[in-house]
Image 1: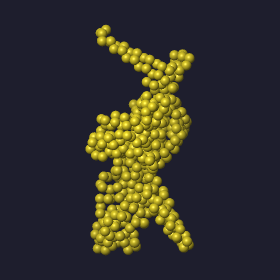
Image 2: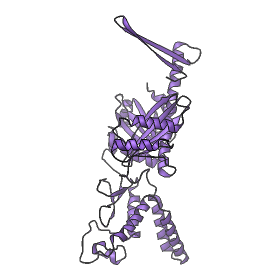
Image 3: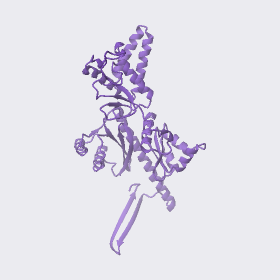
Length: 411
């Protein structure tokens, strides 16, 4: 049984998202926190609650939480969960507000760069989401300043080139003054920029800034400095940038002396939309790669929701065979990746952190149950082994017996 006071003691002092549920297991509130420990506790400690919060707290039967790396991730995850579940007490976030993306319409001969809040599978590439709309706008403005791409909303032939061409801000594709190949080189560099490959560009800008300073052109140097700062701000991407590249399942594993917890994060369209966790006993002597291999084969055997990519920490020996099997089941290529660095590695590590927290909490629960049983039965010490029996028959015949055993907190 869920004991709120006991669960409050287990909350980690980490950023994350918490989900409040009622007795029917309906999600009634989703919130974010820099510190889950402080934020969730505050609902049950404050005396000056508003009427809405007072009512919500009175309906809370149990809660869950997901640990993330920083507040920005918590913010976006909170938005995704609210949009999906529509909790009754998230009044201010029911307006379908979405975060902005930067869009490059690759289906056109001469793509443009724009900001959008709508994701459509139209051949375009989307980068984001950006928790700070101002940063996304600043990046697009920077791109239009640095690269001579078209700035008009629609590309149509004109009797003469527009002003942007004459002031050196556009190569006038509408007048066919630039080839598709030459124009595409710019677009490729812009996509590298949006994917976080900014070292080359920042180095070039730093050189320009130093040259301007040597010429005592401090206005120019400050202008270039601001460009560098803009790139550094908006190049802090979310875990996954290209939203239509993959549907991803991220699997983390945690072990204790008693059991193993496997946690799965579901990432769809660059957004984490949910998670599941599973417990296994008597596996502590197995290597993580063996456990993951067995789990993946069981989990996806009859599962219609096979992703395009599965991310794990350990390299599996039968990886290629599993990839082939999953690809055949899905009807398209499925990859199993073990990232070694960057954002994707941090996503796997986040799954492992949550698996560890989930496992620790479960073991605390079992210890508390045994302590309560010791007190109820008046035992001198905690029971290490418990056996239960059930015997049934049919009209005195066909007797069947079953025994369940729990030893050292294991079933």
